[in-house]
Every structure is written in structure tokens, then in C-alpha cells.
Image (cartoon, rainbow, N blue to C red):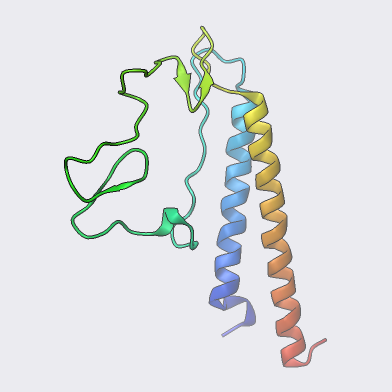
Length: 140
């Protein structure tokens, strides 16, 4: 077994690949900011990263569009899509232009900046893990 086949390094590599794919998708959103009818897209968090997105709902519960588990069918959801004050022109909190384009450049650039800093953090963790392994085996 090679040092780079360790599970922690595999998880860090997977996370770096996810950040690379997300950056490409965010760049596509920015590139199509003036295309009529274009809706911005984003990648979902990978499962199993310790965040709420990786947690399973309780047995017998259904998960609504707001991500909250409903253990009782009478519980109300927090969906703004079909509520009495729903605005069909809203897309994730921002206005959709009359041309149908839902890209907000400020939001996309904030996401890109956050994604870049998260990628740098994961890459740094990967490098530090490799350095620690090299010290442990006496190659440094």
C-alpha cells in the first residue's frame, strides 16, 4: 500500500476535485450572466463530509425541499415556492431578470471566492499530511 492510498488523503483528493468542478460550474454561471433564460447552477455538498448535508433523516421521516426532516405528516414546510407570499420571479433570494436569467454576479463571485479559499485550505491540509507522513517514514 502506497502512502498516497491512505483514506484521509483520498478524502482530501476527492474534496479538491469537488472544488475544481464547482469552480468550473461557477465560472459557467458568470460566463452566461447575459444569456436569456439561463438559470445558475451549483454543486451539492458531497455526502459524508461531516456537515448537515451528509446526515441521514430519522427512520420514517421525509425530507422536504428546505432540507428539514418531517417526522409527522401534519408538520408545515418552510418552502417559499408555494406559499401565499411566493414570488415566481425570485430565484434563491434574487430577482430573475425579464429575460429569464437568474444569475447574480455578486453572489457568483462570492461563491467563487469562498470556493477558492476552501480549495486552498484542503490543498494545504493535503500537503501537510504528506509532509507528516514523510517525517514518519524518515524521508525528510
